[in-house]
Length: 443
Image 1 (cartoon, one colour):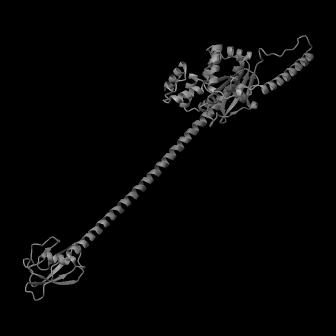
Image 2 (spheres, helix red, strand yellow):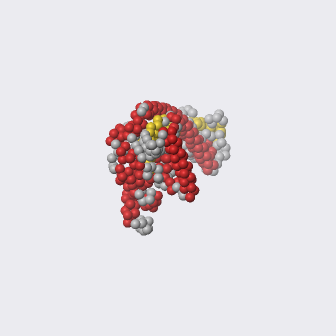
């Protein structure tokens, strides 16, 4: 902050701190840039920042201009009164035809001379109004001048650019009253002093909720509006309103008389335009209702589509979960089979050797397999029941899970690879020749 305000005066530093506090902008460099752009006019800078905060376009934005205005003189109500100070001079003692001729020649010569002077002036001198200026400063300076010169008793003057006033009038469906002030024109001074300060005029503008915008044509903003309005004479007042969805100049008046201004207000213009605004309001309300209904239908359709998509997603998730479950089961079964194959390979060396037929302790056993095959094998009566189970377990035709049992009386000898280790064949009652059944127990 010290580096930013090092080259600022004490007054500028106070304005910088005040603007930063009012605008809630933390970056002091941004605040200084805004104030410099508005020539350190704190009031104008704050007003512009409020306009931006409220969603209105900045007067320096070039991307989007104000709404276009229809200016068709053939469709406008035009009212005027003679100038109080610029009456045409004619000699009263001359006959009327001769007086008219003299007056006409005088006006012709004067207009020709004025045109030559203006042409030379435009060539040798650049109009300062053509230079880029701050519209808010131009409007603010005129309001200040009006307050200091004619007093504070006047309609509320819009503190913003012409474009912003147009946008507000269109958005809010209000009348826009435009007054263009010619700085050195005596009629304009008289109009400001008597007509714009008239209590009835102020009350009428306030009651009808008009936006009142005014500016001097000696400034860049006023000159720009002057080129749009093409007033021709001063003081100049125009009424702009939303008509056929376009901002349109529907009435204008030139003169200082209060009656003329009320003629603009009352000669069917506001009555007609109230209906226009009402129709525009109804149409906008209908469009908003239609848009709201369309939005509601769209949201309902979107909700239904989302619900369908949710159900499809749930179904896809269920199918995926089922596939994962079956895959895990297959993997577990495959793992079990691999473990059993490995165990068979590990236990094949544990199977006892087959004794000779002549061995007195030999026991001949016939096994009936689940697939119908018969196996014969001799064991010693000292071999355990577990040895018999391991022999069947390692055989290629053996199921993975089985039990060994006698037929009659039925007696299960062994059901697992860990069973029967301490029971010999002799102890189990198996003698010289036996028939044992191998039953598949895998579910």
